[in-house]
Length: 223
Length: 223
Image (cartoon, rainbow over all chains, first blue to last red):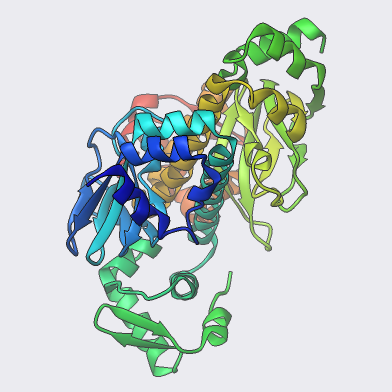
């Protein structure tokens, strides 16, 4: 694919990815450093421990990032939707991937090579500001997750997670995903979902959970 | 602190070490130094933010408090480390509370003074991005600990971290402090400490814990 075509696709993300802050020369440089990748549902984009040289931006679909321990247990640290970066730490640190990125549904993503991205970041203050703010937001989100894990019980964590993810859009997550996201087991999550559903707070479908009554769900969150 | 001492502190910090000497002098001209006694709070969560901190000597804990007065420690930082860096990139209030663990000397620099100098140095910008990437990893590492480590593992890890921050095999804290550090109850922390004492890894005194065998302690940190 030619850089112009890739840039045209990247341009469709204008509402979530401010490419227009870049002057034409930088945009072209970035276009030359990008490739368009298509993944099937459940396909792995990269594995924990892989050498890392690219960042990704979701064009369409949904990606989850997991941390795996030696016993095969999974922790779902983040979900990435249209216009969102993942794997971007590879741009700033040498070193292996610290998580595994898996497509939840069929996903198209822009793959950005480190050198090109760093050149553009080095030249362009707007791009830097954007990246600084993004990393800052990621850190705040992770820190609030630390607080949730320490202070909230499982039911509260699940309610909070459902509200947060539900607000961002559709939720094609399995119960295993939910368990991995809140640090619990599938069995516990299953029981809690059934309880929330019985009380009319949510509707549980196959790989799809819909929040019906957000304010009641919010009241389930107790420290 | 005199100008030479400030210059020495800055030189040891990667972000400032990446600057030219003239740029570093410019930063140093805007720096203020402050001292904190043990247990003194440097800033509280939700305080307005606007300064970056560098530890000249001593150590601090970065913790997320809840409304009931519990806290969970996100990190322990010692001399040469930077904290409060999120304040540089967005206008949100402080995300965590920082408290001096020992007599601590810091230098602070206001956001605008910092950014004005740093913006001109591509190497320093890279160091900031690396610092943010490290903070992201640190936060996801804490989440991993909370989900994958049991309480004895978290206690062992916390004692090792504190001992490393103090540079000696003794940490001064109560069992309540320790419970807060690892996000667990006092009862389960007591039990974990008794087990570690039985293994000869630690000796528990009043308001202090001595580390007798780091290797044994390390073996308790099982993911």
